[in-house]
Image 1: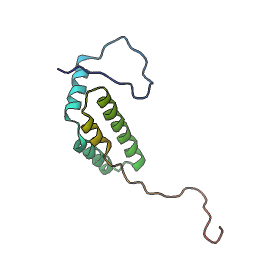
Image 2: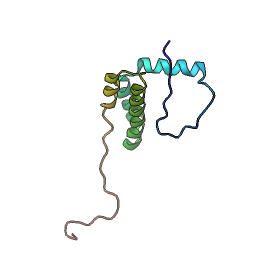
Image 3: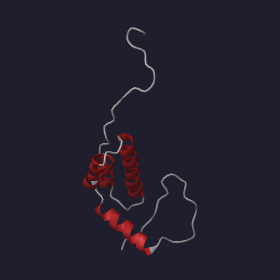
Image 4: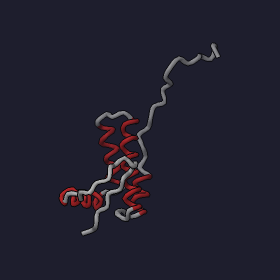
Length: 107
């Protein structure tokens, strides 16, 4: 069984002297065995089908991309697989101007 190393993504985790629960370690290991670009793309599609806002979808995908990048840095995920996950396209956002904008005649 591979050794599992948990990476602190944003430096907010407090130092802990307790080890990771064996069951949690096993689940994280299993997750890293099956994650790939197709799985992340299906995740994006499932969020779109649940009618999440594009910003919410992109935020969640950004977290998955960071996790893949850090897992590759720790040697838990191949660099090619992490690069594939990072290339998953985000949700398209409709650019709707917010606020009071001048019309062509007013400008």
